Every structure is written in C-alpha cells, then in structure tokens.
Image (cartoon, rainbow over all chains, first blue to last red; front, side, top):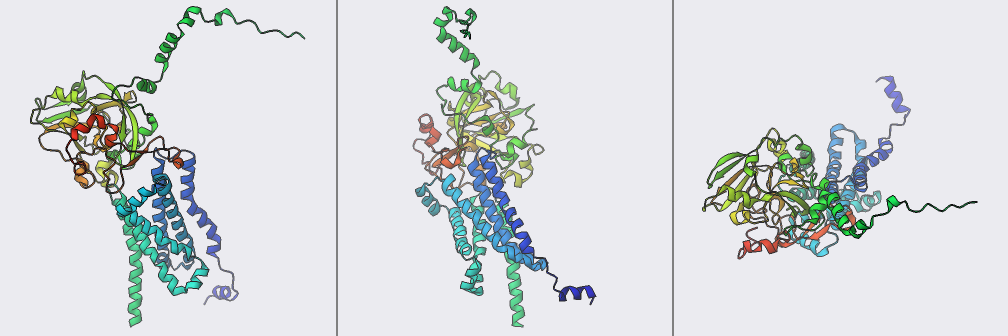
Length: 214
Length: 312
C-alpha cells in the first residue's frame, strides 16, 4: 500500500463535504426557472397569453423535478457517488413547490376561483383527476420529509410511504398525456424517462431478491 | 421695480371669427384626416363589425396556431419569416364551371375589399378581436359558378415542406396530416359573414396569419379559418377536415362556437381575451363564451333542427 494512502486514512484528513458546499448552490439553481418566470411576468415578457405560459411552465417543472428526484438513486448506484442522496429531499420538496404553484395557477389564473366549474372539471375530466392525484399524493411526502418524521415512522415504514412518489410521478405524466390537444410526443418522452428510472429500481430489487434466496 | 404686463395676444394667434363659427366642421375634418387606421376602422363600423376593443397587432401576430410552422403559439411568427407568397396560384376544382389553376391576382381581381372587425374564438379557450380586410367568400363562389350539385366547399393549405418545418417533422407539426384541409357547407360558404381575408389591420396579411389568403368564419372555432389556401374544391360529400381526421371525438365538421358543448379536455363555457389578460391576477381577461361566438342572430337559422351536441 502506498504510504500516502495510509497516511491520509490514519491521519483522518477531513474529507470534502459535498452536501455542505453544494447545498446552497443546488438550492439557488433550483429557484432559477421560477425566478425567470416571475421576472418575465412582471416585466411583461410573457406571450400574449400569460396564463398559459405560467400554467404550462409550472406544470412542466413539476414533472422535471419529480424526474430529477427519482434519478438520484439510480445515479448514485451507477456512479457510487453516495453524497448525491443528501440532495434528494431538496429536489423532492422543489417538485412539491412547483406542483403547488401549478395548482394555484389553475385555481386562480385559469379558473379565477369558479368553484362550481372546478368541481365539474374534476368529475368530468380524467386529466384533471390525474393532476389532483399527483398533487395529493405528494402532500404526505412533503409533510414527512423531515428527520423527525423518519424517526417517528421508522425507516422501513417511512420508505414504504415514500414509494408513493412513483405513483405521483406516473399520475403527473398521465395528466400531461391526457391534457395535450393532439400530439403526445412530449408526454411520451417524459413517460419513457420515468419508465426507465422505475425499471432500474425494480431490476435491482429482483436481482437482490434472487441473491437472498441463494 | 417695474413689473411689466405680458403683451396682449398677438393678432396672428387670434382665430378668425369665420373659422371660430365653423369650429365643429373644422375639428371633424381634421380628425378624419389624422386619426390612425385602427381607430378609423372602428369608427366606420358596419353592420357586421363588433365595437369591442381590437387586440393589439403585436399580440395577434405573435400568438398564432399554424402547425405547419410549429405547435407553439410563438412558432409561426418566428418560422414564417421567409415564407414565399409570390407567385401564388390557387387551383379551383370539382363541381364547378371552369376548373382551372389561377394566379391569385387574377382570381380575386375586381372583388371589392372590405374591413370587418370580428371576434375570433380559438378552440383552446382564448379569443381575440381582429380587423380583417377581405371580401365575402360568396362573391368569389358566385364568380366561379359551382354546379347545383355542389353541396360543400373544401379548402387546402399549401404543402411546402422546404419552407414549413411542421410538415417535415411530426414533432414540430403536432402530428396533423398534410395538406391541412377544411370545409364548409355551401350555405355557410355563401353567408355574408364568411370572409376570405387578404389583409388585417389595414395592411396585407402577415405570413403567420395565413398570407396570402385565408378563410375567416367568425362563428366557428379558429381552426376552421384555413390559411395559405391553394385549392378550392366544390364537392357533393361532406369533406373530412384535418382536425376531424386526427381526433373525431374532439373536433367535428361544424366546429361552431358553443359554450354548452365541452371539448373532451376542457369546458368551452369561458375564454381568455388575448391582450386583456396582462393583469392576469385580477381575472379581468376571462369572459363568458357566447353561442355562435355572439353571431347567433345572423347564423343560428343555418342549424335549425340540428342536434348541436352531435353535430359539434
């Protein structure tokens, strides 16, 4: 063993704390899309239909953050860069943040608080139902995202609960798929990425189950 | 200190009494000369014009659905800059006295242009008010002399794959089949509200709005207003429009604006008026959609006895 490795380990040179250094950077980066949208809104740079811009942008970023959140685990396994896991909660909460903005846009700008219309929307239109499902499923996950709640629920149960994010993301993509006027290319693309991310998990789980049996 | 009074009003500033007496005529003459085009268009409103606020030119020329140039509403204005509208030929086909291919100029020569301020309601729940310049389609149809057996008119948009990115790639063009096809029943085509537009806002039609020639049917959803027309065909059978073909449950042949018949994905009861939604937080741009887009008095009789839930 080369001496420098030995020295480094034994002398306990403090290793680089990715989380501490990158946390504020990641946080600020995650705020960029909505900051740009807010700036475009106040400076009048949105299109002739600002409602549509805000509605579509918040919706798309919800899906993107869900996909980013779900790609942490496969990416961590692929690269063995385990510090990544410490950013997962933040990304998940950002997905929830965008989902809430998307919902507020619908209630306020799109429907302007016409509650009877919204009830009709919910009962008549399956894409609205899928959207609600996706949002509602994220609420318990956002609430129990703290360390305190992990302790309260116990790791196993907490993990089980947080698998709901798979269902939420799927409902979100279906919401998009059912919403478009005609062309489903883009929602299908999101669906493929999501399928890939989920498939990586289940393949690994099956492999581990088989190993355990042997 | 001497405080000097200002000099009396010089005589050159004093309005001669003769002009003063005729001041109302003078103001009328001056304003008729000076008013900008749009205001002038509105002030001469004819029987078919709405006096609602005209959508800003910037909005109606940058927010368009024209899938040949891309599905995003901002795509057509960006991607149609180099679209060539000269020379332009229109093929007149089917049950008509003289089927032939015409140069656009020859085809419409002598047809008197009119300015018409119409509401435009898109199937996507937004609307505009546009001052079109064109001629009633009826005048062109009469000139072409269709056979009595012709019950429908079918229109086609140009296929120009080299100039229209949406026709090259379904990812850009939204998956419609080309050429874009639309149609009207003969009585709809002959209705005085139905216009062929070659201009808007007192100018020639911008490429993104359907240059050099498009259809405007103000009581129907905007997608009936086929753009860049290269073929007019008189037929006996009801044509299949592009949107019908791609999703028949959502898009019918008639596509009359109707607040009580929902799109499968959204309610058609209300709409966003483009240009009035700048203050989006106040809900000010949201308005109720009117039956036949507010043209019920003029067109409802065309559909008497028809079930509009089935014939959407």
